Length: 134
Image (cartoon, rainbow, N blue to C red; front, side):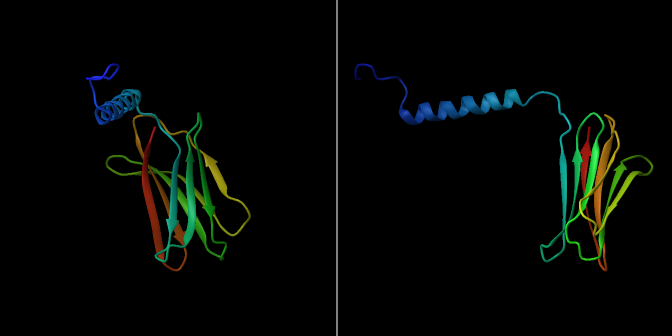
């Protein structure tokens, strides 16, 4: 053994460093789950983006819907609270050929599951949804 050499090889030290970094990242992310911004993009089958819906998580949540095509059709975004025996429609936002996007505020509450749905109001039925929670 050379003077000043360590007990571990270079590859072993590297593996230990990776394990330590992963451990720190897992411990750092073990806190309570918090809501975050959510994004929903709607494309047609050719991959052309038709619209977007965004949930901005703040004290009073903001929901924004954008028609990205400006071709005479519109997109509609809805917010649903998942419930039993049925889901409850809470918010509807439509955006069409005008400049800019449309938005509304609605304060979602902890302990409930919500769904964002974005629909294309064109000649074909195209929609997409995602689940969000507080």
